[in-house]
Length: 138
Image (cartoon, rainbow, N blue to C red; front, side, top):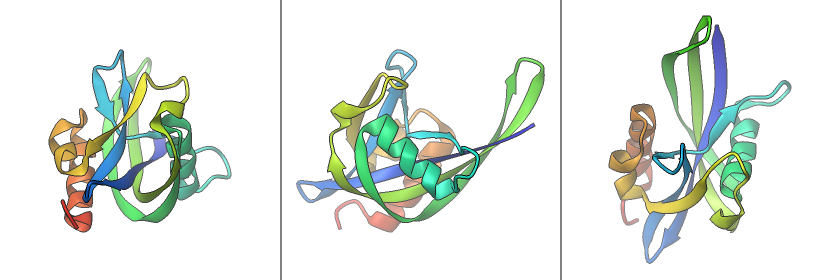
């Protein structure tokens, strides 16, 4: 089986440094980027925009595609090959307090810390790439 999802890194500057909106899952134990399945008729960029809005409560402007993360996982009776396309967004409006019920919480973390703090290896690599593009201070 194959599965396709999309997600995003929303960047906002606080005190001259870039911060990224992240979500908490699994009782707050997992720190991740917002993402979800691409719905029929939706492009990956549209799905990423929707997932960012739903899971973080933020309105954001699409900047560019960052990278794809590919991995295998097991679900009952099937082995699934999953591709998640991640996009870079610029914060426009909203509050992380307005996240939906699918996540435990949404929060801002310093982009410079994201390559170490995110729970999933593929997302840490995407964050490292974003950090190279955006820079830690500029």
